[in-house]
Amino acid sequence: RMILNQVRNAKTRIYITNPYFLPHARLLRVLKKAAKRGVDVRVIVPFKIDIAIVKWASVTFYKDMLASGIRIYEFKMNILHAKTMIIDDWGIIGSSNLNNRSFMHDLELDAILHSEKSQKKLLELFLEDLTHSVEIEKKDLGKRTLIDKALSYVAIVLRYWL
Image 1: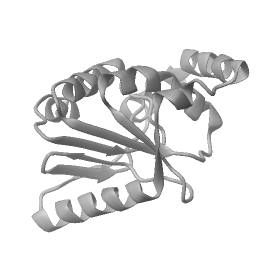
Image 2: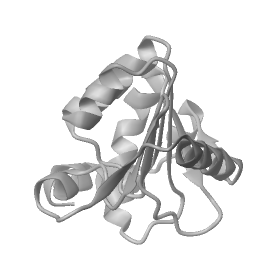
Image 3: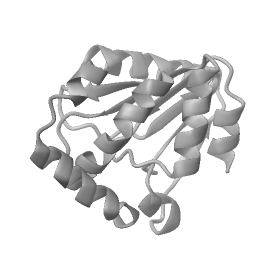
């Protein structure tokens, strides 16, 4: 609820880094609304992922996210395992993934950054990660094969358990 409220009240930016990006429908809805009202919403996800089915499921959200103005980047350097969120001048870092499993079943710990120095550093790190990422565009989604689309369909059906 805290994250949903922060996203709803965002004025300038929402920057997310998350390796297992399978947002709940409510979170996805408020992210898209934020982007449509002019908030700079960017999400960094991994290019290489250790659990392929998660990526297949995540990709199903991209078309709607891009259409709403959310910018999506794939981190190319190495395995991405950071779980951070910057909303305006509010930052959070921890172990929670943006998926049902983290919110409903796993024991997770996240820290809200209160120090201005820590918040600035988190923003610097996010911007640095962007330089090692490639932005996903709508045309990139058209390159998916029929097999990729079928795997995504199966993955999204299993989303609750991922």
